[in-house]
Amino acid sequence: MSGKFKPESFLALGKECTYRDVRYQIIGRICKEAQISEWDAEDQRYYDEPWSSDLWVLVGAQKEYLYITEDREGYAISTAFTPSAPSIPPEDARTMTLETATPPRRILERGTAKTVYFEGEFTWTPAIGDIDKYCEYDAGGVRYSVEWKVSPDGAGIEEVEFFATRPIGKLELAELFGEQSILDEARRASQHKAQYRQWSVLFWVAGMISTLFAVTALFREGTLVDRFEIEMAKIADTGLIRGPFQLDQVGRVHELVLSTSIPDNSEAWGAAELLNGEQAAINALEGEFWRESGYDSDGHWSESDTTHSRLFRLDHPGTYYVRLMADGASAPAATLRFELYKDVPLARWYILTTLLCFGLAVAMVKYQSTNPLYIVAGLFAVGYFVLSMLADDD
Amino acid sequence: MTVQQYNCPTCGAPLPVENRFSLQVICSYCGQSSRITPQGLDPSGEKALLADFPSILSIGATGMLRGTPFKVLGMLRFKYDGGFWDEWFLALDTGKKLWLQEDEGEFTAFEKEQLTSPVPPFEEMQVGSLVPVNGKQFFIMEKRRAVLAGGRGELTFVVTPHSAVGCVDGNAGGILMSIEYLPDEINLSWGAEVPLEELQVDAP
Ligand SMILES: [Zn+2]
Image 1 (cartoon, rainbow over the protein chains, first blue to last red):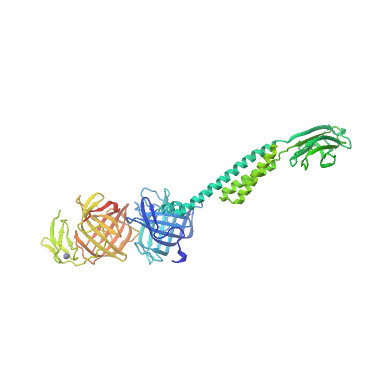
Image 2: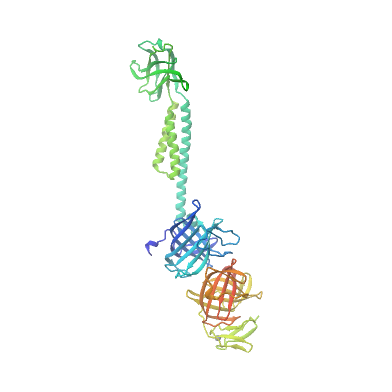
């Protein structure tokens, strides 16, 4: 057999199928190369393109003929039919019908096909170079076509036939032929699909839980350890020591917050140093506080910066102090408020987990893949999430 | 039902003629074709013995076609480039006569209709065109030249073996139509495909 015209599918000469309760056998195959003109409904015009297809000829026990067309768009099954209004539309016709009861329909495709190869047995005598022309329209999901064989001199028509064609999926066709291996393969693919769907659902759920935690974390502060407010002027130059605080949650997030109530158009400076048991500074937070307002062409305006905060973790459990310092010379009425929180939830980790889970869920569906990398990444995210959650609770 | 019992003038084989409108009988054994005359058989026709090809039908066979009992009276064989086809002349129990075309094991039943107006000659019949025939638009789907190879049994018209015939097949308003151009007459017939399950032949 010529390598160029090898069949591309599981169909082969001699194979049998059952279609509409009739047993058929493939007796021949004709390879055709065509120049077709196809209607594009969106662009409202015809596009010309070359097309190649295989025509499988099947015959039933009672000489019924069945044709399977195979091309790059898939498969279609055709049977001959006897139209009530037979005709060949003129070359320039844009609509046609083959039935008296069907009003003229848009011609969806026309073509001129040349036989380039054939194999098998036929009840007629195909020849390489045979030219067939056809014209087809759609009615109720069925393609109705008139096909005519051009005489070798190109001048006349040798034969006219009418076909009704329905597209058929590869699986449906494989089922007709009882092709177990193809059906098994499809089943494996659908199992694979079910698998990635399951994973995808899992990540989706994880993402939603994570979202819930992220939202909660955004609106929740940590546990207050100390809150203290004092007029800035009352803080000595050497500072003011708060504490001792017993802080034992190593590795957890703590937060120092400094805020002021400050009169308009004034500024101040404040700082908080975290001291260890030996009163040595191990972390510090400082900042300028200010509030300004005025009038301009747009009316009243007001700007301020009255809060500074710092997150930190501890390396060791133990006793800690905080030294507050302030310079409120230009704002005598200003007060400094200090807060220390432990166990501060960090929304950003949950947000990250959320994004990762949703991303994986979408990616798995989109690429229909259960790439181990995805699963590992997803499990990692979920694992991280679970750890953060557990840690939050102790 | 036998109307007349003849013997082949050439070989002496029995030749029953059951249809009183039959004009010709062809001996299945020697292929001699004879005109049926009031005086008896006139063996003036040509002799053409047909090869036996397997078929479920044979001269004298009985059976049921679409539920109606029939008997095979005659047969004609046509040859063309691509092969041959047979046409079986059937007498139905209802008194109707039918032609059952057998082509590669496919059966089509044709009922003859009198032509009410002249049809264009074979040469002018164009495949793919519409021709008015008996008040209908006849769409020509296929046209072939053939040679009448011969026949068997009795026929309602006289045919000459080896004569050229033209066949034009098509569709008129959703029904298969066929026009046969024989040397001396043009036959118009309406056809319908007969699925094998609608054709039962009694065991001989
Ligand atoms: Zn004889």
